[in-house]
Length: 349
Image (cartoon, rainbow, N blue to C red):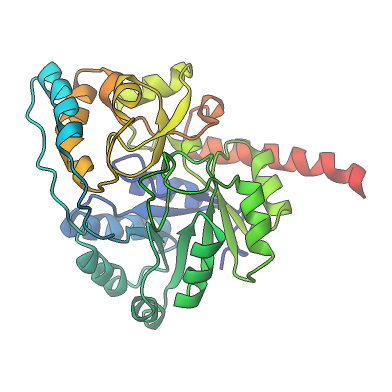
């Protein structure tokens, strides 16, 4: 599936703005591949972006869908009161903490109708019937997994590949089930460890994701058994990325640690530490997407004000090393670094 890529690097589907059709197109045309993020988009917007991305890539791209979870019954009142202080700070009203399915059925219909070549899923595995629909439309199915049990379920449902997400990754963990008693939502596997564990139990192609920002990282995961490397953070500062100016400045400064938090969305996600992450993470309920909707006006107002302290600054652990430039130049750098890394391995022969 990904064995014919000129360079086995994939742009991660970073929902909320960073992954654009232009970014996917630039990386694909530089020899890689890219996933368009469907999360948080209306079906109408996704429809237009699929068509645009197909034009830019010659039809070589993927789309990522969020699998809806169950409706949380957690008490949101205490977290709402704490978030209300942030809303007052920026002069906005809190959003309505409703549950929704991200219009998943309509988006699934779209990827089938457009015959998208590769469809990936996050936050769960599609049903066997949904996998069959995509296969009948000529598509390939990849499922994001964070532990061996999720990999087994995805394989049983008919997945063609697994996106193996280590705890180093920025943004939301792809956990199928969020354990409210664990700040990370579940056991934390490092990427290389998880690749080895899954490689020992499945023959499905593995796509490695989590903290990969250097060509040597790409070489390392290929050596560990991956078919390709999926990178997100390294492209956040790309010219073609839709990353907002306030987050770009925070990324470029590079002085913040990263931690997991549910404070912004109700699901564990790795982001740069700021005021809201520090003050509101403890006790934030496992209630996605309710908290996402609740905090959205605050996040938007902070971004508009140029204040990074109340934004979800998603980034992987290695974000200070990401760099910037055009997507093509980033891919070229990764290629050169990967080649140099493989040359260093000659001493193992």
